[in-house]
Image 1 (tube, rainbow over the protein chains, first blue to last red):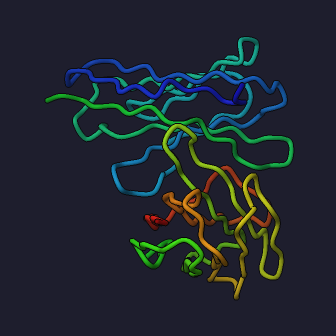
Image 2 (cartoon, rainbow over the protein chains, first blue to last red):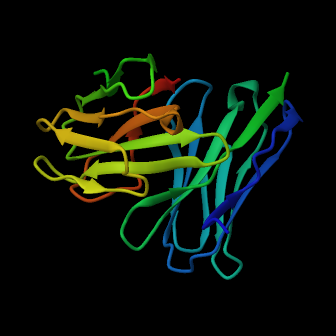
Length: 110
Length: 114
């Protein structure tokens, strides 16, 4: 079993929809949780990070961490075609290395 | 300010050939990383350098060597390429001297080994 599991999609939604992207993990020692966005044929870029449990909001994006369920989510409100990308969750392990999910491909249809 | 640059962008090698992937950053970052990205596997850390003069193995170091040439540059060498090393390789950097969650990635090198 992988330490971090992420549904690869693809996920296709109409413009304006609310998008929910999720990851589960098995290592209860993870403390930092990140979401990276990767456009086609580009390198990933950090979108948001959260420390421990709770919510964090940044514009149309909200990151949630539920450590009791070992589950993290990224919500995108009022999705736009420019949000079409692969979204990678990542977590920092005890040796401070990042463990990435496999990524979810999102397509927002105009 | 170019951020993280990688050369080459594309490369095709025959099994057994060697090559070096180059990476440079202009953000005065201390830490640099090499990852590979494969379908269904996500990003996996090959090697990293927490500061100039130090390098450490990541999750999948076998078949690779690295050199932290100076603070700006971090190269990845394949001594004898194998088809299993066909992948997209990303270099990244971060400001701190330890591994950081805020990493800045280059555009990647697409390598095919036949």
